[in-house]
Length: 179
Image (cartoon, rainbow, N blue to C red; front, side, top):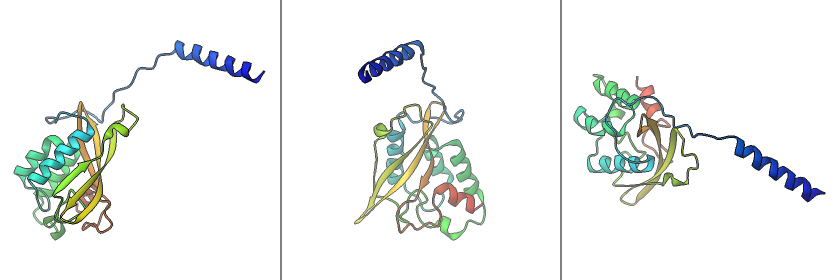
């Protein structure tokens, strides 16, 4: 009796699933007003860190360097960094140390975890862990990638090292505090 009920239930479920079609919704966080970097969230994040390592900066990047970072950054993060850079009296913490990682000197190497372990292919934002290292120090931060238009871009960096040089949980929180 029990097996018959299970078989009937399985048949009904199969029949109902054949009657409905589910189209994946490809959604994003709005249009993109800047050029893109090709690739998925993990690939774009790795390319961003590779650029950061080859062209590091202390504090808020200057206008020229910020322009190089532009294709990797969300519209919101880019505009917030531009506003912060244009402020005449930046606090000392902004002029010292790497804003994009927990360690003040910034990383000498970075390895972004694969996004292939994230099951939702229709996601609009994906947090990725990043293993960063400089000399004998190694730590992990988290980078939030969002979808703008057809692009994956950096929306935020979460400082996860226990001895982070910045007093803020993330880059966006730090930028908000300094307004």
